[in-house]
Image (cartoon, rainbow, N blue to C red; front, side, top):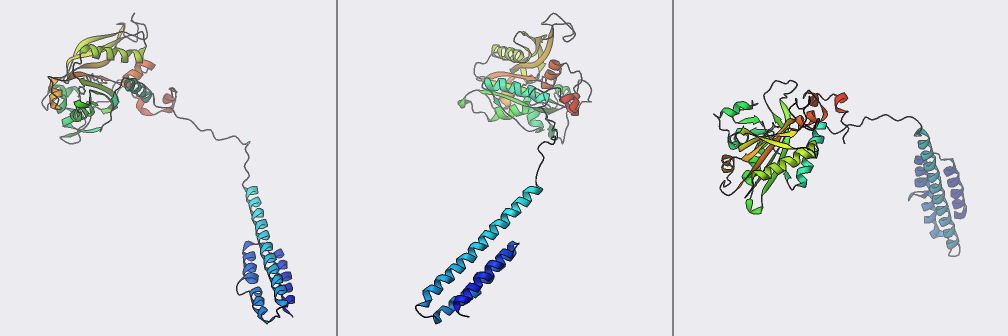
Length: 347
Ligand code: 2U9
C-alpha cells in the first residue's frame, strides 16, 4: 500500500472509531492512538523521505488534512459528550420552586439591649465615649479606687462574688471608669464617658433581684463642672427614656464614690404625676443614682481634685425595661423563653 492509501485508511478508521466512542476516556485513547508521537500518522510521515519531490507536497498536504480532520472530529465529539453530561446533571438537579419553603423564625434584639443601645446613642450624640472593660476585676479597681477600702462598711451594700482575695466579678461598671480616668490625659480635653455592661451581685434571685444584671454608668471630668451640668444631663436622660413631658427631682443620698450624692426620681410616666399604681401613688419613680465625684476617687486615679472635678451617674437598664413594659419579674430577662422575648420586636 502506498503512503496515500495508508493515510486515507487512517482517516477512515479514525473517523469511524471517533463516531463510535461514547466516553471521554475512549476519545483520549483514540487521540493518542492516531495522533500521538508513536501513532501511525507520525510513522507514515516519517516514510515521506522515501517519496519523490513531486509526490512529497501532495502527500504532505493529505497528511495534514487527515491530522486536522481527526483532531476536529475528536474536539467535536468531546463537546457533544460534555453537553450530554451537563444536560443529564441538570435533569437530576431540577428543583421545584413551587414547593413551600421552610419557615425561619427571626430573632429580635434582646429588650435590655434595645434599651442600652438607645441610651448609648443618646450619649454618643452628646460627645461621650462608650468604654467596655473586664467583668472579672481586681478588688483594687472595683472597690479600693472607688473609695471603698477593705474595712469600709458600705462594702456590705454590695455582696460580691470573690474569685480570690483580690479578684472578683465586678459589682458595678465603675472600675471601667476608674481605669479610664487613671489613663486619661487632660491636656487632650475633658473626659466624657459611659460604661455599659453586665455586673454581678451575690444575691438570691427573686422577682426584683438577679445575681447578674446590667448597668450603664456615666462620668464627666473637667475643670468647672457643676451640679447644674449633672442635673441637665439627668433631665435629658430621663426625658429621652420616659418622655419629653417628664420632670425630675433630686433627693440627697449616699454613695462612697460621690459627694454630694443624689437619688433621681422622674415624674410618673403612667399618670403624669397624679399618683397611680405604677408610682405607688407618689407621682414619682426612682430611676437613677448620681453625684459629684468624690475627691478621694479623683486623687486615687492621680487627678488633681483642686483643679478637676465632675459628676457621675448610674442607671439600671433592667429596671428601665421593667418600668417601661410593666414587667414584674426581672428573671424573665434571663430565662430566654422565646414566648417572653419575642414580645419585644423593637428592632
Ligand atoms: C467613677 C466615679 C464615680 C458611679 C455612680 C451611681 C451613682 C449609682 C447605681 C444605681 C442603680 C447603679 O443600676 S444601679 O445599680 N449607681 O447610683 N453610680 S454615681 O459613680 C462613679 C463611677 C466611676 C470613677
